Image (tube, rainbow, N blue to C red; front, side, top):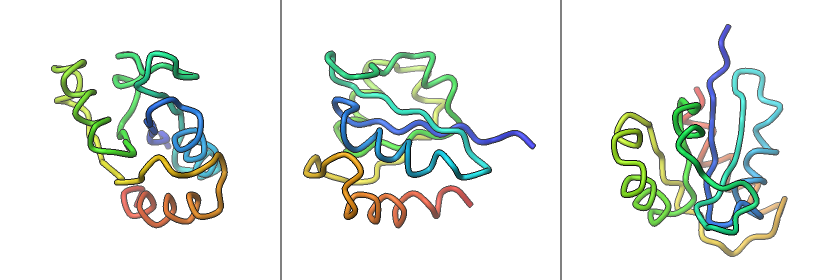
Length: 109
């Protein structure tokens, strides 16, 4: 069985997307990665990551807008879901983990 490839994107790839990558890492049906759209991101979002992913979860609408603007054609063929999670959490924050599970899990079924 092929695992679904899931990419999580936030601004700097320091808090939200790495938390999501870690939380969902052990789900047997998916493979996870994370990246940021900011130039100083821990892992900067590049086109090969979009091409790798079966589904992309962004934390805010501005992330999706930037991906569509920057990666045009590739972004059009990528399923991008906006989670609506503001940048108010720390890495592995219990509240962030709860919100991520509630908002991401339905898309993984």
